Image (cartoon, helix red, strand yellow):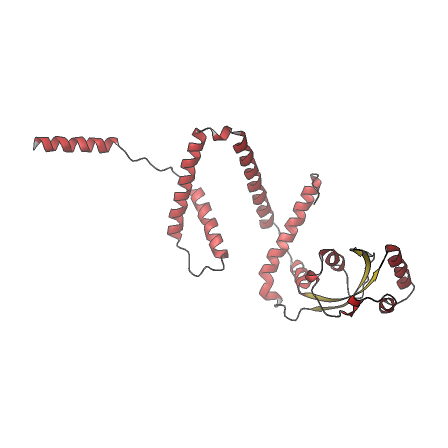
Length: 252
């Protein structure tokens, strides 16, 4: 009996001396922040069919953050924070992180008006008809512009300089056009003619916006209002960032 008691004491002492290591303590704020981001991504998932399990997500987040902390500490012990290549990568990742945060900050603090939303709606639901005349040289196209200024109609100009593509007479969306044409056509109103010849491959073109209508299949404005608001904010943010980059010597 005394022998068994002694053995039990040795085992107990050994267990007491072999304490299980404690997992790193993660501040609640970090956990809350990551849980919030996981839930946000889940809400945006079109395949999400059930409500996320908040408790399970939180437990998984805690394990992930604890794992990160343990491995980070080991990396620091190994001196990786002093490795030039590691430092370069870290600084790049840090810059990318803050750049993303700043873009999100701008979006949160950007306001849009009903006028902004209606402008985007008109752009996205607009359908147009284009008439065009092509020329072999810019000089020839400029001469044709002079004829228009003197009173020649665009339709008469088309007859003077016919090409097979003029037979196309369907409504299209500006987004379907090559970017270099869409950029020129976007600010034009019905009846307007391009101010300058547009070079496409080896030809020079004059375009007339002959007709404009709304896409009959477009969803009503109120149904897409929230999407339009998001797009309007993003457009304003892009303009702000472009201006900031240009002010710092970076062209786009």
